[in-house]
Structures are given as structure tokens and as C-alpha cells.
Amino acid sequence: MSRIRKGSRVWSGAERLAAAARVMVPNGGDYFTIEPDALFARVAPLEIELGAGRGDFIIARAAAYPERNFLAVELAGTIAQLMAIRAGRAGLDNLRVARMDARPLVNLMLPEASVAAYHIYFPDPWPKERHVKHRLFNPILIAGLKRTLRHAAPLYVATDVAAYAEAIFAALGAAGFVRVDDAAPGAELTGFAMKFRAQGRAVHAGAFHRTGRTS
Ligand SMILES: C[S@@+](CC[C@H](N)C(=O)[O-])C[C@H]1O[C@@H](n2cnc3c(N)ncnc32)[C@H](O)[C@@H]1O
View 1 (tube, rainbow, N blue to C red):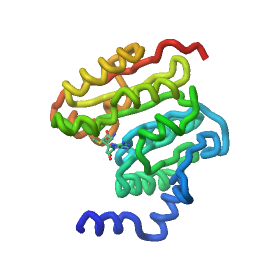
View 2: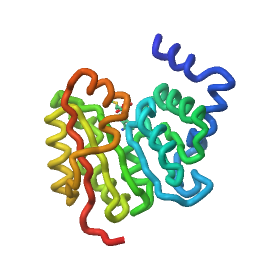
View 3: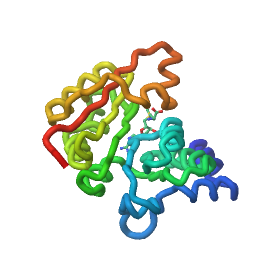
């Protein structure tokens, strides 16, 4: 109940609603669809963050790269709304927020070779064996990442959970991704990154390129 009250507080006030409306991908009608080119009033390389949380990283990144388009995807309603308010207040024309599950977006909705970079930072680890099925990274999502990435476009990943990092990196390797760097920009800048670094926890990060496509 308190979570519902907290959510309704976030999602109230004319200024907040107006700020969020500037960046929020509309979610009305019978079907939720995403047309990347139609979201922005221009064609530009598209970077996507999956599970963007409060948006600390993607808002800073969109401000730093105005020539690129950015889509922040977040499943949790209240968190997505908070991010949309922050992003709208930042006045960025090149950032949109989608409150949705990242899996159908990547697996079904995005066109092939349409993404110039993915950022996935500190995905929920679901450490219990019976909960592993809830993890974002699974073979279907990885196939979707591979399908939607452009040639030589990076997939950036970071997690503080060593076992999850090992599983993700192995699954990416098995799917034909090559690790090209052990750094990722969001491994320093997301809300969780800053929290974990302050706690002195190790962060496992990597940049990956898909192999096998030349266009
Ligand atoms: C541990 S938090 C990390 C947030 C942010 N990336 C950071 O580093 O600060 C994981 C986030 O992923 C979101 N999330 C979990 N599953 C998701 C999914 N299937 N699609 C989109 N977002 C998801 C959660 O709601 C949460 O905000």
C-alpha cells in the first residue's frame, strides 16, 4: 500500500507530469509498439539502456552525445516515471523513456541491425536457483541483442555479482560475441555503480562485439 502511495506521489504535480510527458514513449491503445525512427524527429545512431533505473547514466550520456538518440527502458513503473521526470527536466531532445519489459522490445519489436550500442548495467541477479528464470540475460535475449545490433556496435555490460558475470560472459561467447574491452562507461556512472564502488565492491564489466555480420 505504501508503495502505491509513493508511486502516486511521484506521478503528480503539473510540472512533473509535463516534464515526463516530453520524454515518455506513449503506451496507449491495444498494442505497444516501438518505431525507433518515429520516436525522434531525426535519424541518428540509437543507443539503448535496458533496466535504466533512475536514469543517472543515460541522462548524462544523452547530454554528452547530442548527435545520438537514446532510449531508456525500465520495467518498474514508479522508477520509470521518476526517470522520465528527471529526463524531461534535463530538456534533452535526444532521449526517450519507455516503461516496458526489455525482453519483448529486444526479442520482437526492434528492427534488425538498428542499434548502435546497448548498455546493460547491474541487471537484477536473481541469485536463488529457482529464480534464475527471471534473469534478463538468457539465450533468447542474447539472440535478440545479436539480431538488433549493428556491425561492430558495442554491447556494454556490468555487474557486481561474479557468478552472474561469469554466466553472462560465457553465454555471450557461446552466441558469438567477442569481448573487446573490460571496461564499460556505465560501470562507473549508474546509480548502482556509484553505490557499489562506494562500498568497495568489485565490478565486472565488459564491452562485446557481435561477430558474423558485415552490414
Ligand atoms: C539493479 S537495478 C540497476 C539499475 C541501473 N541499471 C543502475 O545500474 O543503477 C536493475 C533495474 O532493472 C530493471 N529491470 C529488471 N528487469 C527488467 C526488464 N525485464 N526490463 C526492463 N527493466 C528491467 C529493474 O526494475 C531495475 O530498475
